Image 1 (tube, rainbow, N blue to C red):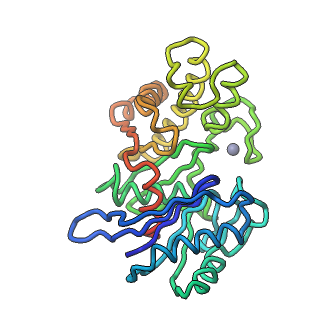
Image 2: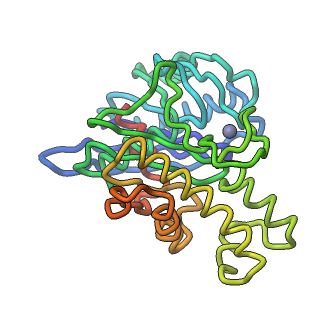
Length: 298
Ligand SMILES: [Zn+2]
């Protein structure tokens, strides 16, 4: 048994995962959900994760703990480099050691690894989701921000500095300043925060679920179309660069019915002819569990 934890800005999800055996995909045995401590401080967050892990590990037989974190991690997969929606005190903190110390206080001596949450989602889709059996695929998570994990030749692509696969920051045009410090990035138009801002300023509902229901109405379509177009450009760029077997779309926004199809149809416009017929964009069926499966596996 392994434990996977998904640390989000609002929710912490932790689960014990039974490993794959005899060709069977791994299964989530038990899960615990809790609100992320309001101040998002290291001590409160690691304390909350420690309690959840201790609870899940009380059955015994747990071998390791993996934590999916919302941001950039170092090459050694121990330190958080920057978690954009968390206090600056997390910068360059050895999260693995901080959590190990917390677990020792609960009498648990378990190895702890961390990984970027979208990378965990990609690993999870490969183990238990839409990408089972695939060697080359990309997972894009659409939520507050846009995350991405790339698997090539069966391995997670981390890059020279550990920061590869930032699909949210593909340059799709324009000069909108991005929260990352760059400009003209897909995330400024297509992530939930950007969509909400544009929808509210057009007098539309700020919640993406409600906005999506208004699809077909001219005022809503303007915002929705800009989002679909930015994602289509991103998907086309990824496809031209990596020639993946499939691109799997997860994250909160991916639950909008027909979103993956709409992005795929638009992306075909941007693709070079040999790629048009092979594009395979799918909505994730694992949802939030993808990152848990991946985190348990790191
Ligand atoms: Zn950016």
